[in-house]
Amino acid sequence: MEIKKAMLIGLGAIGCVYSKLILENSGCEFYVIADGKRAEKIAGNGFSVNGRKYIPNVIIPKEKNIKADLIIFTVKNYQLNQAIKDISGLVYDKTVLITLLNGISARDEIKSAFPNNTVLYGVALEIDAVRNNRDVINSNDGIIEFGKADNTVLTEEVRAVKNLFDNSGIRNNVPKGMMRSLWRKWMINVGANQISAVAGITDPQFISIPEMNKALHMVMREVIKVAESCNINIDEKDISDYDEVLRNTKMESKTSMLQDIEAGRKTEVDYFAGKVIEYGKRAGVATPYNELLYMLIKGMEKK
Image (cartoon, rainbow, N blue to C red; front, side, top):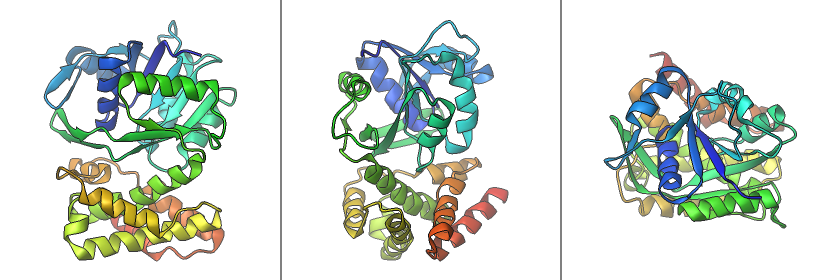
């Protein structure tokens, strides 16, 4: 299998970074999926990363004359249902779909909508991308971990996506067990995104302010307890490894949820604390820190 036509839906900060890399290096036909005024804006003005402007091909969902070999989801979780509807006319039986959404539920929702297609798990790790007015500031492209739940033997679809990422200069890794990577990233998001949104701190301050670091660990440990009930192997070493990532952060980067709060946008708290609480109740695991964060962030949204 070869990916000749790739598409991306969700041109936020992370979507801009990966669109830039695919446009610059991949050699394949690449489209951004958008509709209405957003489509007009992207087609006319493009997007900007580190001051450089890019004008991608834009495909409107109702234009069903083009079919995608690969569709990359980089929307917010609460936009996923609409995104699934938007791409339905662009999918054929060989289309591979991959989600880079935060959280642990997006892949299953996409698979439910497209049961006969290959739908891959994916997480974007260590990437920093902060929107500054119309420009995205980015110093670290990070690494994408992706694949099926079990990648002991790589399928042709996984190999094809890896080839596209390699050709695009996107660092990537296919772990043998994808669920651990998925839950580990979720644990980080549950801790860092939510605390930063409430406290208004940047990533390096999780290390420079001891109280913030302790709070981060307390919230992440609740995810570890929930993961244990689901037979997912994440532990204290994953917390200390993330501390090391924070120590090496080069810029005063902000989490996506802090950016959402500052911009007055809806957050993904339902997919972070909300899911921790849901899983905790199912497993009989107490999650008081996430319950508090859920109420605070919901209140901030209403404010």
